[in-house]
Amino acid sequence: MSPFTRRDFVALGAAALAALPKSLRAQSPDAIATKLAADPMRPQFHLLPARNWMNDPNGPIYFAGNYHMFFQYNPLAATWGDMSWNHAISKDMVHWQLLPVAMTPTPGSYDSFGVFSGSAIAVGKRVYQVYTGTKQGPKDLATIAGDPNNVQESQCLAWSDDPRLIHWTKADNPIIPLPPTGMKITGFRDPSVWKQNGVYYMTVGSGEAQVGGCVLLYRSKDLHTWEYLHKLTSGTWNGKPTQNPCDDGEMWECPDFFPLDGKHVLIYSTLGKVFWQSGKLDEATMLFHPEHTGLLDLDAFYAPKTQLDAHGRRILWGWIPERRSEDAMRSAGWSGMMSLPRILNLDPDGILRITTPQQVSALRGTAQPQLESLTGIRKLLPGASGELLCTGRKGSAFELQLSCPELPELLRVKYLPDTHSFLADGKEIKLQPADTPTLHAYIDGSVIELILGERIGYTKRFYYTAPTAPDVQLSATGAGLTSLDAWQMHPISPNRLTTL
Image (cartoon, rainbow, N blue to C red; front, side, top):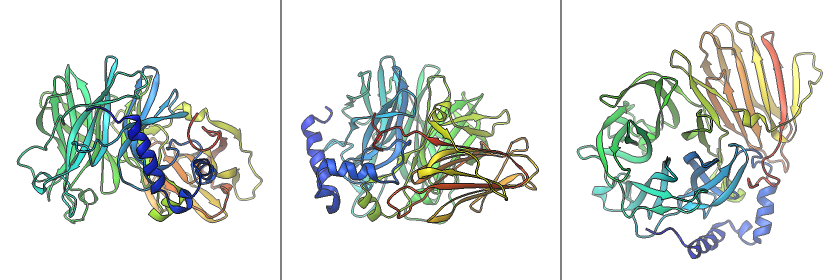
């Protein structure tokens, strides 16, 4: 199938303008851009499109000297719908240039209802994307059944021979049109592909009704013809039915499976959270045997995807959703952002460790001076933008609080020496015995990305009514505190529209 023409994209642009709220639609494109750029809650150093809705990271890849990020995107509105793949390119995973939308639904085809999440693999000078295409169809073929829409999910293939990955060609037909027979499927999406011992393997997120979520495993010699093997691994349903099977563990979304530090790691999303498992892959049977598990993040972080960077490090990206109403998103004209890159490693015992790459630290600007205080250390981050690094001492308590005029308890984190754990806004996170209690946070417009003890993320959204971004005050107290450093951060764009 041929990709969309320039005429198609012009038509989409006109439809997108019509879909904007009246308050924006009556304005010129320049006026709309000015409004979006002036929004104090739009981040300054996170990736997001110039306008409209975004969600899952798709097919991130380092190719021909550039980092490419594709992500779910609605070209028509700031709420979910009309799922397409947007595209951005970077030299360092931090400064991004937006490129033309990569893939959109093809009317009358297997992806006419949406081009959904997937992953990338380079084969020579060509990059392939495997993704989930959806169309409306008969109920007996639906993998998402619902009145009035019965949606059939299939796994699809597209490729690009363009060094900048701008032009894409879709295969004529799905590469996996239907899920395995004999299973009462609760979903069938989000393929991820890799090559191992000369064979291509693909995982697909799925689940069985009243059984639990699972990861289906396929193999291929050429990326076009696929054979179903079995479940790579599976979970257990919680027994509490919900309208969406992902909310009760009957379905696992966005699985990502990869080798890491001598073991294998599986990441998947369900129950409104993102889980990781580490363990052993039996290459003879191609079955995964988990040994350890945990959460990747405590709040506004979902549907993550990983890639290898230029140095072979495993980099994690996640979708940071909004925590406000659809009316608020429509009024703002934008919704969602990409997380900052996070490096994943395993300790020798197989426990996951999370850090941030040096490229993010390169955005540091002025170091914020310590303010006089009788009770502890205080610092200020003007305009809700900055980086914070706090280190404590094992066995001695300390506390960190972030506040601003409208949100006096924006964030509160306590280190509890008796249990060697953090209490973050009431959520307890136990550290490993040898861990140093550290807090590493990035504050950007309306989001806080916090990594606790290099073990787990806590991504939090915050909103305010002031016409400018508030100054955020940092206060730290306790004998266990050994250092507190803070920096302003340079924006990656002159106008918050994330383009170079």
